[in-house]
Image 1 (cartoon, rainbow, N blue to C red):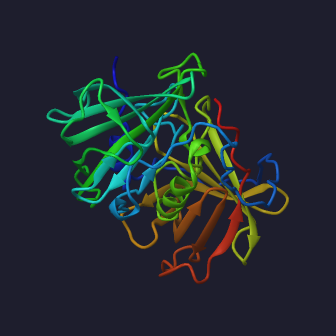
Image 2: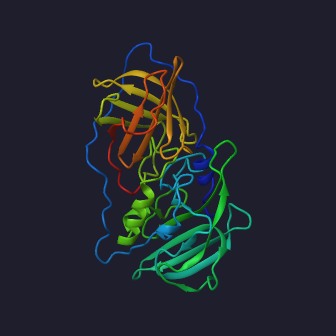
Image 3: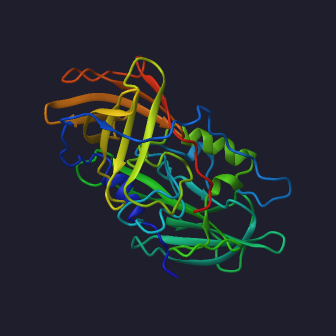
Length: 346
């Protein structure tokens, strides 16, 4: 069976510093119909007592955020326009150990279908008579004793995360990563990787703690419109998301739109309180900037430069005046909220 992964990394890494197509400022105000989102936090709901649970496939000390930290489930790009990304791409420090997310039996160890010289490990989990499977790709090496039929325990080393090099011009350098996927064979959706489910709802307590640490520092090119760790795989184009100001003195609202699920090009519209678009153009992101990525809202009259941070349904956004300097940090940021995460199923 083909093993899914990359254009995942290609899109997350190669598009990280990409610019977008030209746009124009509206000559007349445009009303954008949106629904005001509830201003509530997105929390992780623990699995039900007695349910199948998993940990993250790494120790917290092996996590890294040199490039993106964690690329989420369900986002769409050129490689996942149909069905969305079926797992998490987890970034590791160089030499980081990929670990079993639950007790199980090794199904197969096979050459990785995306990168020559790398390995993929799949592990079956029966709980108690229900089948799950976890998959770990891009392994530079496989640990001793990890072979088909071998029993593994939660946290056992499966191998070492393989490196991946950022595309020229992205300034992301070399990173290590694995694509981590959970399949639930009681779930089926008629799309690529039909059994893949969002891992978030299955995390045990230690898994949640490690995930939250990683997720706070994650930045990826699609988060303006698909900001959650688990996004609906059934999304269709055009894909739009509106962020409304909760506090601060920035614009009342901003809508970001991707006309094609195969592209990371974004358009934006700044909204007045009435819902009328009072400014529009294209978006250029700089994800390699640390500690906060940069955002340029570009119109024919010039850019409005900013920095931002997104965690789930909450965005901090600091924008300079049109034609002015970029804020150096988020001390002047306004807080924006968007609609909460959709259900984990497609």
